[in-house]
Image (cartoon, rainbow, N blue to C red):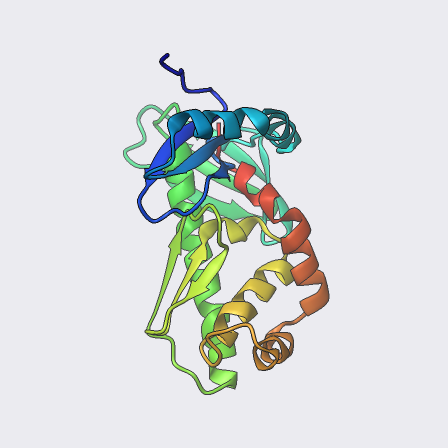
Length: 229
């Protein structure tokens, strides 16, 4: 009997997976069902069906999307900022500028959301780069490279090659939360683990460790709603 894939999830077969698992994609608002290579599909579907109520409740608890449209309010580094889009058909390029509590977009595009996202990614990278380098200097460590991505499960990472990577969506987090994530990754330049020494250093590097960590653990998922449609 053929099975139909549920609108709640997508199936992904994996040779490396050892067990069935459901992972939420908060941007697309759908789950990914990871199925080990030798797992019978009937067992996989039964597993998903048994978690249907949990999946529905989880999706219902997600915050409403906040697309980059005229009039939308987005928090930029802790400051509530209103998006103001001025449509000018004769404009040659899209111009974006921040003025007090507004993000002013002058454009010839009916939907400049991709341009707004690109602008915010660049802003996020500049801010995160500055903060990371400042903290790295205090522990006499050098950062080889810093990148920003649209990660879905990790807010930051540090490789053994001293490359730091962050989610650009941290630009929507309160200052103490962004600072905590930066402190966390910079601390990994010295300790590539989560030992007591690592956490001690992370606390030292953080402007407000307790509030920053608490916010990311309890509200970090809210960052994924911005820019989605």
